[in-house]
Image 1: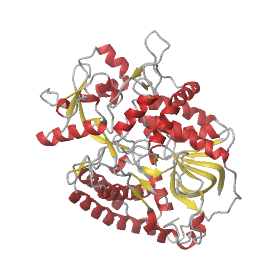
Image 2: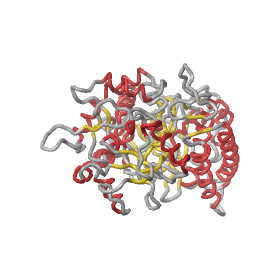
Image 3: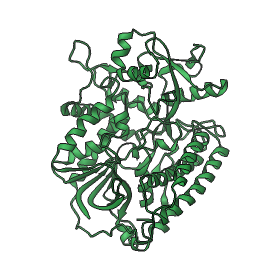
Image 4: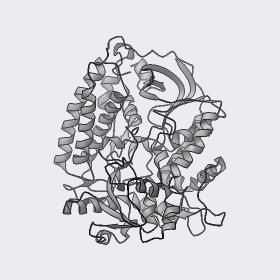
Length: 543
């Protein structure tokens, strides 16, 4: 058993920030499913929203966030995040993040994205996430108080309730973690555990997310007894590059912010039919408009055109996008970019309070895996990295104020009653089936019939996967599929409970928005019968 003061599960911006904020005072272990830079944060192109100029204001940032959130944003949380935005950006600058500056000036270049009333997006060209991830990742790897375990995947949280079922509620004691290089499961005990494991975009067939985005933190927290909220609000980014050789490549919001125009194959502009803000409308509006135009005319994609801008402007502002498109034979200085909507961000997640605490004592959730109340029914562009920074700081502050508890000996992972899998085609087949029917039935536009069909398929696949999980040694793919099925169930259940259309959730059966905005909160009370079984009696099934 390995022991640390703090276990951080996930190596994106949220996890790296928590680690650095704690490292001077705590012994920290940070685990990453693959390499430390393999995260959604690393893929983020746009930037970080903050009121940084005299022309802008915290109040304007708050209002833009509330409007985009469709009435479901927690106003206190929104104010906390917008108020802390500037100091969070300044902290990154102090760490050495190379944000883009105005030409021949020391002022930082700010851009504008959909839903924002001002230019307030600070960025590092069109690869902000990579610049931040590289800067912080190097510091984390070099810090003597931080142990980084790459190629390690959390399997499940360990709680005192599982050790002693008589407890009404229990602390989080750490986690079982799979070393994917050796196939062995290690036991990590920690005074505090932080879930910073990102979203679940891989539950859909088309996504802008990396392969690691499989909802692990949400699924583990749910199985441990934490509530989740607003899982129906899945943000589909309007513009993912459409090309058979382009896997999950995002065309940043900034392209539209700098004048990009959405067109049909015949060159006709169409956003004027849907919103007065045209291409700068919030993402849910733009994604639905594209989806409608594609389905109406049977199109494979639409086109985003920035070619009317000077070539040097395009190449200097969008070097990553320009290079990737050129590799595929698309010269964006001369022609429009083929794009389609794709699953991009989960606005819902594990319910947390204003200090990132979950329902389980000593368990925190930060970043996309959490539901803080900031995003409501639709996330405002470039508020995601900002939320990571602000709540990572709040999380670290709360941990530093907590005392330690006596160390306990945790049971080791029990593989005595399982064998090696005789065939793993079931995992591949079920993974593909899940992602396809989630895209078709639980996508941008939903109906009661589609949701019912999806839930039926989820339950059948869960039975198959749970049987596999109970009888065979676990693998990376099996754990991820198990978690994706759990997240899919939560998304569909939440969508079924919302009898209206709001923000990112649009239902043909309930096209109108209700007067009162109410969050969708799911409680795992029906899972307590599983949690009541002591670890020693369940082998690996519910450890």
